[in-house]
Length: 251
Image 1 (tube, rainbow, N blue to C red):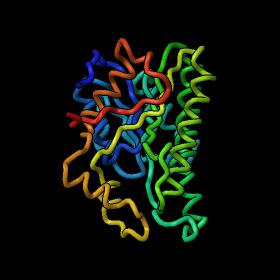
Image 2 (image 1 turned 90 degrees about the horizontal axis):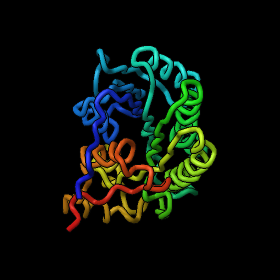
Image 3 (image 1 turned 60 degrees about the horizontal axis):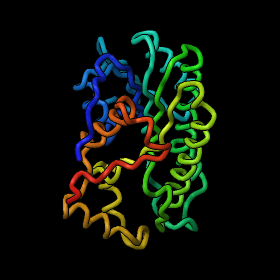
Image 4 (image 1 turned 180 degrees about the horizontal axis):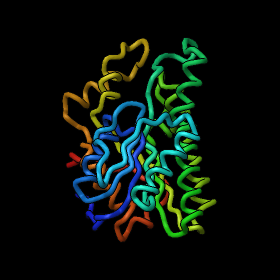
């Protein structure tokens, strides 16, 4: 079932990790709907800066850089209504016994601390300006389903879910709604990386290869429609803090 698309023209949304994959798809669909955007990524974002877009290269592991970026968005666009912590990585993919501790730390710095930094920045913005806001932390089915070879990814996504629940408890009475938002399987570069893994590094790889053969992916546009309905639609507040996008091609 298609999500009802509310009127979002003039709203201001930040999307991290907006250079490719889901983040780029969200940025493009939001822009088509009239959302004004703050986009950041370690590389060039999907849309360039313009009258309704602030696009910067930002490392989400640097909290001061995230704060500066948010300040620029507010200076240019006036406020932030929706913040989407989308930046993330999947690798390393391998048994935990073989994982370099430094690679694990780098993964945590992006997938968990990056969410912490974005969430803190947005919460402080809302406290400063007052009013309502929506925080969306991109999660995964890996938050509650373990996969051999995905130790860092499963651990950080589970942590993101619980962190989001804490934020919801702390900030709901200040007008913030916080969601751990699982987009389903979207065919991105991350999925291509998964499919290329040998079974000895990722035993469930054949499942993801079968998804590609069946074309059983959610499109970024499908995910974006549901995200906007969640954030700004009349029934968004009834969803609970954990949300999973329904499969686009379900019978």
